[in-house]
Length: 511
Image (cartoon, rainbow, N blue to C red):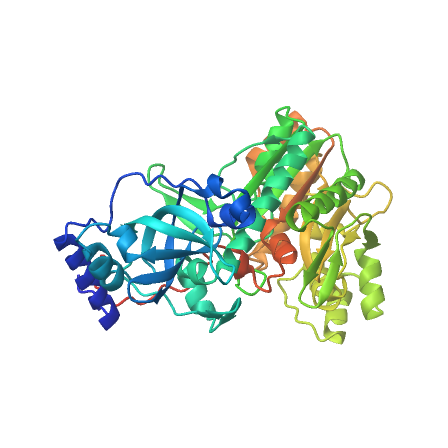
């Protein structure tokens, strides 16, 4: 393989060879006895008051800057939680006659980006900065590729790396040079852990269901198709886990949930990624009214867990997750924002309404998709604060129970925040005959060219025939919720490794 190296990369490889010639392993295997972190030291060191507690610290991290002063040097190392200054004095790390560890290794063979370990004691410099006085240092990893240069002065960052192409494609480097990015993913973990705690406290059971499915059910979306070699049949990457979780309700579980990695072979933009994470949970003997109440409680809990308050800032908007949330029917929302009452319209009248509103429509779009188009294009953007859009037309919701008192509607809600759908929930359809008829309507739409219409899952119908208790279920978009709670404008900013076009590498490819 022919790897094209820059001048800096060649120099670093020469230093690698020099280290090895000096008997220093640039990639040692032995455990390094780290006993504290930069943050623990900075938050707890009180000078003379408790210096004995910090007389023997061992810290490891990446070398981020070096300030040479001849026979001594200051440097900054960055560990997993922050940065700390270290002070290295030649005569202390080289107490004997041989000064090569400092003169050759420290001064000439180390580079920004190398990972080192230091042992020493904590002190405060004349300028008041908490630092480590190094008695011993160890090279733990030689970095062969230079980091993008980021300049810092007096606590301010200059020339920060902001190019999305670089940041998303080389997230590992992004995390090194933009430490604030790590905080987004720490908050994402807090978000998911708080949801788990909320559900577990209430008796819900976390489960796993298949990612590879013979029928891509549970949503209206275009699936990714693959092939199962052993069975010699086509399989689909799941677009939702709904139908499998409902099978578990049939089987006797009262409350199940799953953080589901889903895949939809559709467009990419600032709020859509083909691979995304959804929380779905299903609870027996509940309805969508109960689900709205529990969702408000969950959202409030999560916001506090992530940011310490129910309020979050998104761009220039303040969003308050504190319950209760506004509730409005989808028909009333459309009438409020377009002046058009679509509640009694048939398909052709809806198509005329789309033309009147300058919205696209085609022959493959049935009544449900036409209403969805109007709401999505003319109403969604107006709901900045958490709002439940409720009581959808039956054509839009093939897995939802018909409304108990409003003919032509179903018991469904979507939670809208900052103009985007964050959650979708139903009183679940548990009538197997009605469900079969709804699936058959989807097949008619598929035959008209709707490539997002649902397949018929005959095994799921068989499960319903055994009897599923009254149930309510919800799907919550974790990525979009994370965007809201961390003030990130793009879904790619809350995914560690978002999908991108394959990169052209300056190397011979593997065949």
